[in-house]
Length: 340
Image (cartoon, rainbow, N blue to C red; front, side):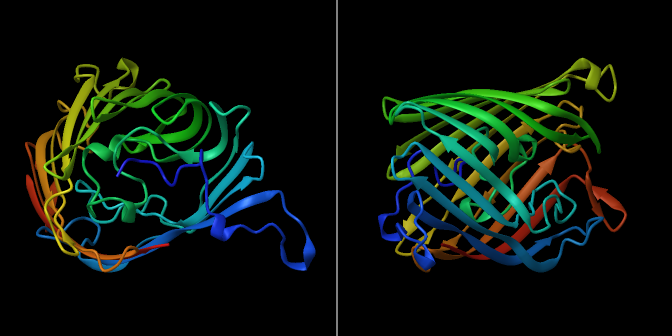
């Protein structure tokens, strides 16, 4: 699932149109759409981590509203909720963003059909996995995804049509790594399109003074299954290296296959390989790989029940098993969710 919530450039929900509000107060909005969802589940790992990993809990909750004016020249989008992240490298639950708060809120201006301007707090276009967990095919966040931006404050200018888009943006959000806040200013640029039946997304994100990220995503259909390859190249500014002699780059590649289906059941698969050359960008994992299989029961168009079975192997012993550090981890996560 590409890291974008329901697109803001073409909001349509005629069944939800509210030309007049209660009390007879008219509104300029012709299309109003309610979105969101919630999921809960259980996470287990075969090694006990510093933070308790074996637990049941709410995984995410989001309630959003999108609206556009009658002439289509402006739109708003906002969402509140709780979005903690569950990553393969984490010592249990990543509590970042675990409080109920405004996750995104932005205004979109369309001066022409081809141009749009977004202002506010918005999702990044960089990265394949969605910040909202129930929108992804797998439960646990990949190693590749932990270095990618999520929601952030920004101004974004878009140009394009149904076949091709480009964008440039300036952001302002504290970025934390190496257990410290290392910067706040960022800028990004990218493009999307389709060539020969292959959808592509190319993006560049730069946290000024800290690191840059080049991201390439290619998606196509193979034997009726959606197949995506995501490639990331990271580079750390020399001044930001924890050790001046460390290598200043990291790479990762992830393969996503929607998997075979049988009736209401599907079996998404994710395979990834990564290498931070010892500089710590992948939370100390160093060089390694992971495999995740997620048998999913699609109960209805909106509801699902699934189980992540993941295995991760690294060349560093980063997993704390009751005081003994190991270089591998077997994890199981069960998630039930509902999307509005």
